[in-house]
Image 1 (cartoon, one colour):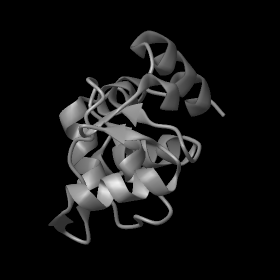
Image 2 (tube, helix red, strand yellow):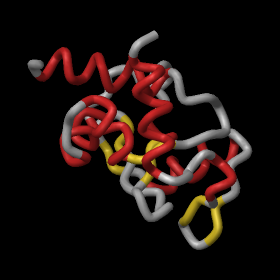
Image 3 (spheres, helix red, strand yellow):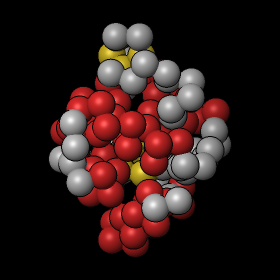
Image 4 (cartoon, one colour):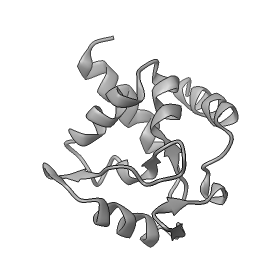
Length: 116
């Protein structure tokens, strides 16, 4: 796949993550056959931040990770957007009750969404 198709694939799957739920960079990367770093770069360059909910992607350990909006890094904005969706953040981490779950089952779910 080329960079444009990779981005389309990542954005397409990310749009399917429901409001109030999250996934990880690693889960999204495995579902798209990319690295977590590649997914992070694609999300940092997201041209449609309202349509593609990048804040719903977090680190594998539950930490928020980075967030770029209109070319500027803004981790506080990511936390605020997630809180508005009803996600509870404690010490800059998200609990498993918001979709951050055992990785293998999440990847299988993302892969099933990819086929739709």
